[in-house]
Image (tube, rainbow, N blue to C red; front, top):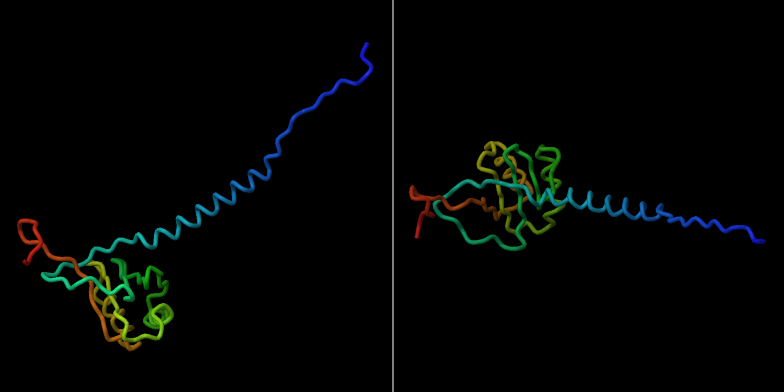
Length: 146
């Protein structure tokens, strides 16, 4: 004869906190992958017979893609107007107007977009401007020059 009540213990795992952690990690990974896309922007540089040395490490880099979108040190400038571009360059470039500036424009960029970037730099007082190119190849596919 059994006097005590039968024990019916249901084992239960609380997964709500686990779901919260997983959603937080998912959001973290989604947010960080969108930032990586800006630094992976591809720009096909125009060719030239001679290329200068590598730009200085503290050089300010302005990129213009084939669709005339401006990027100042991998930060996209949303409005292509000269005033907006000047604000972005001044904010990121700082007060040093003797700083080297490298303009990396895609080979298919409209000429006006490059002139607009150069105009904005000139109005701000930047005087050391380099235009990035790739070394041209001769008919055999080898780089031209010595």
